[in-house]
Image (tube, rainbow, N blue to C red; front, side, top):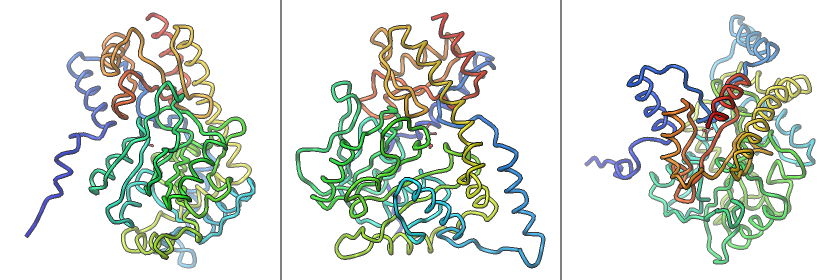
Length: 390
Ligand code: MLT
C-alpha cells in the first residue's frame, strides 16, 4: 500500500517566499513593469570578494591533479573547516570539539532535517516565525504550540509558565522581527529547557549582525550544552546564499532517554547527506580567517548602512520599528491600520517595492511588515526615494 503524507495537502499551497515571488511575477507580467525593488526575501546582493573566489577556484583546480584529486567529501565536513569553526568559537571563549560540528548545505535544511531524529514530539515555536520551522514540523506530524510575541513583550519570546517537554525553536537575532535576546532572556530559556528536558534548536544565521553585548552563540551561556543544538550558516555572514555552506553544533553532553543526540545526527547525516564540495568548504574556511572576516565585514557594513537609512525614513513617517540594530531585517507596524497583505499590495502597486507581509510569518504578524536590508546600496537609496513620495 502507498499512502501520501496528507500534511502536504493541508499545508498552505506555497512556501511563503515562493508565494511572494509568484505574486510579483504575475504583477510584473500583467502591468509590464520592470523596475521592482526587492526588500522582500532576505537574499544577499553584495558580490563576493576576489580573494574568497580565488581561494575556491584554486581549490577546484586541485581536482585536476592526481595527488590532490578528491572524491566524496566527508559527510560531517572536512576537518580543516570544522577546525576553523572551532577556533571561531574559541575567540568568544566557547569551547566546542571538532566532532560536535557538522557541515551542511543550509541552515534551513538542518532545522527541518533535525526533525528526523525525533519521533512525534511537541514543538514550541515563536509566532511570528521563520516559516521553515513551522512547515517542517507540520509535515512531520508534530504537535505545534506557539509562544506569542507581540508589541506587549517587544517581540521577544518569553519561556512559558507551564512546564512541559518540547523541541523549542529559537532564532536570535530573530527572523522576521530582528529582535535579539539578551543574555538574561536567553538564560531563562536554557534553564527552562534543562528543567523540562526540552531541546532548543538555536538558529544563529544572523549572528554576524549583532552589535552590543548580546550572545552570539547559545553556548556562551551556562547549561546550554545539555539542552541546545546550534544551527549556523555562511549564507548571510559570508554572502554564500548561492554557494550553500552551513553547520550545526550538536554537543556530546546533549542526551535524551540516555541516548547521545550527536550520535543520532551523525548517523542521520551519514545516510542521507553527501557532504559539501571541497572548494566550497575551502571558501568558507577562508572567510573565517582574519583577511576573510574583514572582507565579509565590509559587505555586512553595507547592509547595516542600508538598514540605518531605511529605518530613519520609516521613523520619520512615524512608524514604530523593531529589529534592525542587530539584524538585516526591519519589522514595523503597517500604517493606517492596514493589514500586512493590504500594505504589500499598496507598496507593490504604487511604488513597485516588495516587502514581506508579517501575516506570512504567523498570526502575530498580521498587522506588521518586514523589509530586508540585504539589497544593494543603490536599491535601498532608490526605495527610499520612492518611500519618501508616500
Ligand atoms: C528570509 O527571507 O527570511 C530568508 O531568505 C530566509 C532564509 O534564509 O531561508
